[in-house]
Length: 281
Picture (cartoon, rainbow, N blue to C red):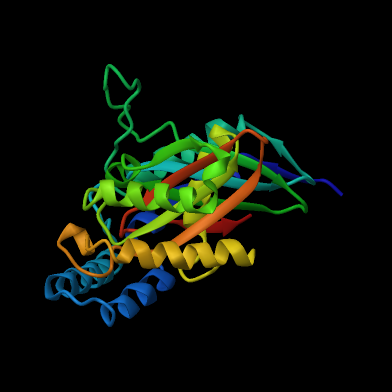
């Protein structure tokens, strides 16, 4: 049976998720940072990690953003194929939700209407909207605010397939090394391998939503995640680029079939403020 939803229902949900994501870092992130304190060898690095934990606690308590850059707002909507919509266009409702959340939450607005004329839209819209069709009659909404510092350090390359696994690993490590302290480490490293240029970049960003410590179910990619995490944390960049052991909290790889001539690889870095929130309608 088809379930009918009015698009107006998503507005309040998205508005609340925008504010929650920007003000409340989840327990998975907190546990990962606390665990990394025991592995950090640099006194400066330890100090930074302790400050990040205190900052997150204060932001949640006072209901203020944990970072002043509340980012571009990616909205992912997994829509059950048995859902039918009425009301305003869904994309308009998504933007209305982002607008409401950023205005009512007093969150910084960072979107400009044109990448060249640089005029701020004033309400952090338009959102980056990814609707996906899934089985069932439920709608899962995820909001992922992404700060400019980490977003600017992403990279994409179509490698020669002959470079194989080692070529992929080298590209990921070199991307993190080049980024240094700019993406505000300790980072989460999202990696996409395969697909096409657009799909590869998308799965790299979506990988950031996986819980810290959760491995790819494919054994070869799970091993690569751990190998990359070790290599990245041997770079010496450390928390906020001040030197130390903990440059990354985790590496998450997603893969997809690709053309016989291609080996696309995308790296999407998430800053220490790993902000996201989800709800089901």
